Image (cartoon, rainbow, N blue to C red):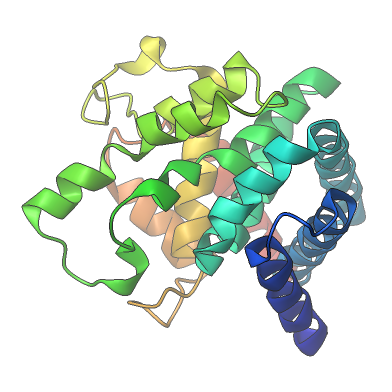
Length: 256
């Protein structure tokens, strides 16, 4: 399984880095396969129940079907992500946790779940437009932090060219770093000003990043450690949503 996952990751990078003569259907098949494998990897590591697997897989399949209707936008989007391999897996990891949290929050409509799924997949696409790769650095300079804080706007502009990314998906992209305490970016919005689905993706984004190994931090935080780090950031996340997510992860850990 790990070898096959590595093979698919390399195949995706090769296909998306190739010239435009590669058929769009081939690119879509490879991306879909990586999405499915990443989902199974997450569920296997965290021993999620069968119902969660089925619900999330259905939503991700729906997102890929939606993107399939815009093959040019899809391949351009993932071609950008493929230049930074970490971002592809982080995108799918964020998607899984966002969809799970959305269900915990009582959201069920197909359109809403597709929006959450698309928001998770595309929230960080603006990072590919930076002049440097934050994953290759440890400490960042003031200027580099300033540039990183432009990635929500850069992502929204890129998503403006993807038909499947509707206005709510673009809203997630530009607001996923806003914080209820008003200390987020790019616009310093406060609690009620922030799109609810962006709050969900924000929690999933942080958890996925903490729970994964990074080039500058080879050892990932355990789920419990990641939750504790997030709880310590008072006011950064919606407290009700964070409690729902924390309770789920602690329950999964005890079950495992």
